[in-house]
Amino acid sequence: MIPGLKTLARAVVTVASVAATLSVAAAQTPAPAAAAEEDADKLLEKYRAMISDPMSNPGYLAVDTGETLWTTARGPKNATLETCDLGKGPGKVDGAYAEMPRYFADVDRVMDAESRILWCMETVQGIDTAPIRKKPFASSGGNPATEIEALVAYVSNKSNGFPYAAKMEHPKEREMVALGEALFYRRSSVNDFSCQTCHGQEGQRIRLQTLPYFENPKNARATMGSWPTYRVSQASLRTMQHRIWDCFWQMRMPDVGYASDVTVALAAYLTKKAEGGTIEVPSIKR
Amino acid sequence: MIRIFYATFVAALLLSAPVSAADEKPVAGAKPGEVAPGIGRDRLEQAVAAAWAGLPPDMQARVTQDDTMRVCSQYRNTPPQADADAILVREKKTVVYPGDGKLLGNWKEGEKIALSGFGGRMGDNPKLANGGNCYACHQLAPAEISYGTLGPSLLGYGKLKGNSAEAQKEVYERVFNAQAVFACSNMPRFGHNKFLTIEQIKDAVAFLLDPESPVNK
Image 1 (cartoon, protein in one colour):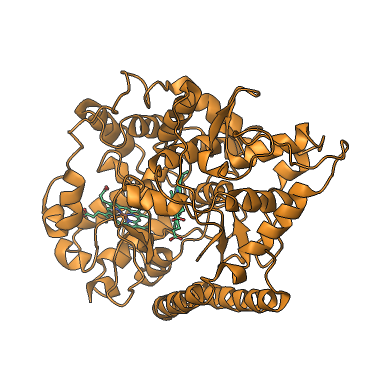
Image 2 (image 1 turned 90 degrees about the vertical axis):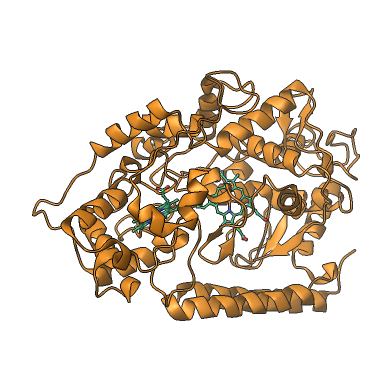
């Protein structure tokens, strides 16, 4: 499971240099920036091909860390997470991520993987998750994944090859999908943006960046089946919670509550659109 | 429909009077007053309040919707005619004009504003000037190929539109408050939201209309 250390070290160095190139490209002046951005795209293309071998995708570092965290007895209860019920029964991890977000009767709530893992840390291990919820994401620039990021990387990786099968049939699940839909169109803040502003039409671009249009099932599947992802521009493993936080950041909104119903509802809404897609994670993206 | 037409035929757009979205599309599966199937506004706003709790007033103001945002969200940007008309009237009243009556600023400053996407994001230094990020959505000067397509191309805009007092006023109003011209426009209400200053908006107008601007070369 654990790739050779040398391969990893090489991959990490490459990532750091590609990330540096990308940030330089972003900082340059207009005309050269466009050219540099194209160069960066080409570079990234090459890079992507080079590391299409999952064993050298730096995101796998987080998967391995997550596996260790999952199987190590920790917290006041000195327990592993191996009895955590991700929806398919205690201890069953294979394919569980492919069925999330989902309704959990024990909390009477729809949860995504991140919310559910936190809940398991609290109930199974007795860990106080308040500090994790306060700083859930690793800072950009090659820092190791946080505990929760690593755990999500591990759990999601165990759904590789599974089709997205979050059915969203329970009334509470349906309610969450509908809430996500309402949130998708809710405009706010100093630029009047909603998700629809940027993801409301097929084939649109912001600057040179193509924006996914989730009404097209192909887009929705490719997107939702590829998170968590290793983001080269941030040199970090990123989860769907982070992507949604990031888009709210672009919308000039204050930080959205981590694992709040808003984020879970948006993930549920997009996941429903991705039904039938296949999970291959962690992927690697810009 | 109108929007696709808009995006495709900029020239036609320039000649036409502002059109409000008339084709009301009720949200599929939702009952009147609901914002999505089975979701009332109360449920939506309760989730929002829980996700952005305990904010200082300036941040809370970003989360709270004004009437225009509320109507546009409810109708997914295609409001019934009466609502669209009400938005145009309400938003038009918010436009503040420069004290000296001059609407054309400095196109060089305007170009910087068009290029900059800085400002308003958590962590951005509020002491530095915000950008208009026009290139995120519009093509403008021919040399800048890194432009987005969320709005119509404005390449050669001043050549088509001219630089008359009337043209200047129209563009100034559009940038100050896009919804004074087009109800539920996807374009930010830069002046109304105090995201850009009056001076910056004048500079953006100059970037679009000044015959010396690269937009019109």
